Image (cartoon, rainbow, N blue to C red; front, top):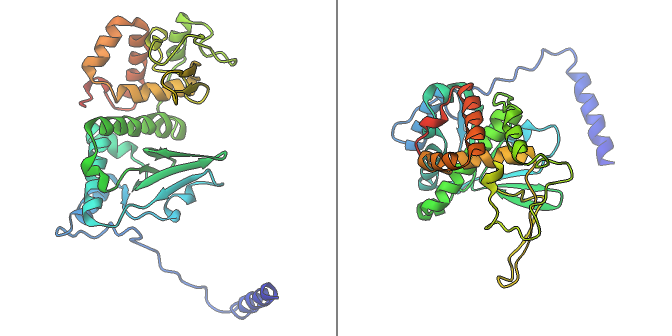
Length: 303
């Protein structure tokens, strides 16, 4: 009955407005409050200057409207806003600079940053009945950075390095590659590993062997970084009787792991690995060339 009354009211309203002038709805010129500077507020001052320079909005208090509009269907991504505390937000902006922005020159950022960068306490993917907490998520219109909490002050250097690698791997392997189609890796990248083991990317999955563990398998020999976490089974609940069943990564996972690798290892460490494993050098050079095509020189990366 309520639905019927509502429908009648709507139809009546439409009829009564038929001969009236069209409604004028003012534009939301500053929806994200980034067009007004406030030097006394470090957060607002940074957001204003950042938008003026890069035309990218830094969102510090995200709602569903800031990321759900990117999707034609629910893909399972959920973003939790950080605590709206000035100290937490300012630490989050500093965290964003150290994990992503400071690694790239201005001209690269101006050309490649998305419409918005979302600071989040948590970025969560709920799909297929499983939940995964992500350090970063990239879509067509935004990049979401997790871990913006009071815990930033107590984060260890090792934890920071891992998150920084995850953020940049997501930026390149997902945003620049899958979303924008700018970062293109040639088939030679995968062929380099197939020269070592022809079945490494087999649709039937390449098995590293009954005795293989994450600790005794020479992944670099194959030009790989690690095993595929989705295909493999690792059970270390009982340290006396661990169980491993390791499979090689798919091409997509291989590239993602490689992008994490080049932002985790220092240039000196990478050079030592490439000197020892020619296949690793070949794949590293292919990634570097693909990045150069997008205006970024991986060899000059300072971590």
